[in-house]
Image (tube, rainbow, N blue to C red; front, side, top):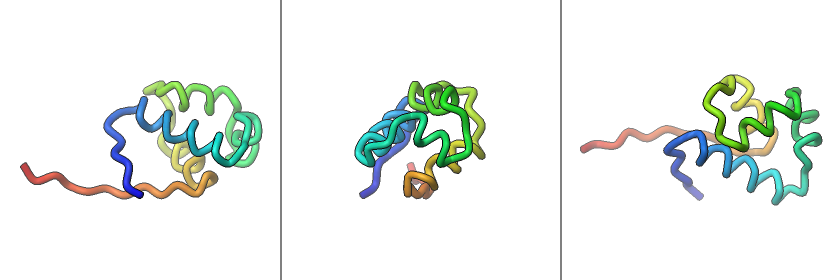
Length: 73
């Protein structure tokens, strides 16, 4: 399934939805991804100051892959 991520809020929604589908708490996900709970909270809220390396680690932990496509206008 392809989902477009247009902004940090979209990314946060995806993380929250996948986390809940996997029945993980924010604390569970933080521990599994090696981050703090506060980072997960901020990520799910779409905070723009999150560190990209940690974002990728959280996505890998959830089994979410990221790809890029170029739009030709």
